[in-house]
Length: 119
Length: 119
DNA sequence: CTGTATCCATGATGATACTG
DNA sequence: CAGTATCATCATGGATACAG
Image (cartoon, rainbow over the protein chains, first blue to last red):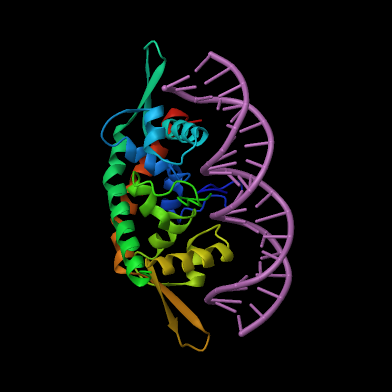
């Protein structure tokens, strides 16, 4: 199981709105993809460049998944070199402030950790 | 690779504050554990009960990891049945509003999805 | 350029059994 | 009750090759 994915056990545990609702957090890159789309629509290649280390396969998968979940939208461009742009939906944009908080706390965590073990 | 873990490639890609800072998001249950601790300290067994589907092994791992990252703190209780309580640190509490946003957006996503495929 | 298909490595998780 | 060890399984992810 990857992230917040239940296969066939627990019938309907209503105790975790968080788990249930956080399915879109799947994978290590989901939030990053969203984050990269924060200001403008981006093309596949641009995202690939902005996300050092991501493979085309995974980027493709995350893009599709986020699109199917309604967080991002794909716009096809009818240019001679066939292209496409991805942009956040209204719902997707709602996540930005929260991602900001997460990143901020993460920074503090990293900073605190460096103080503890500076070497 | 699980979540935001880079092994030995990409030297130091500074493009993704998000990825770098979101290490604490590891695993499917990290946010849930934090969420369960939102109001009061909880014991191991209580958390296990509050997180239907989580295994003791994973809960233990997440607890240790979140503790080592500084998001939660463990308090040992010197009661006759040896017990321990886990509570959020200040940093951990900072995440609560953000988790709230995530859960909220997730709910809307689920709702929208149900409208699309009601059957 | 925009993706997708295979193959393979690693990590996360669950089940179960076991220790303090 | 609290927590850990082992085992098996599956999803995520990377590399590479390939297709539109």
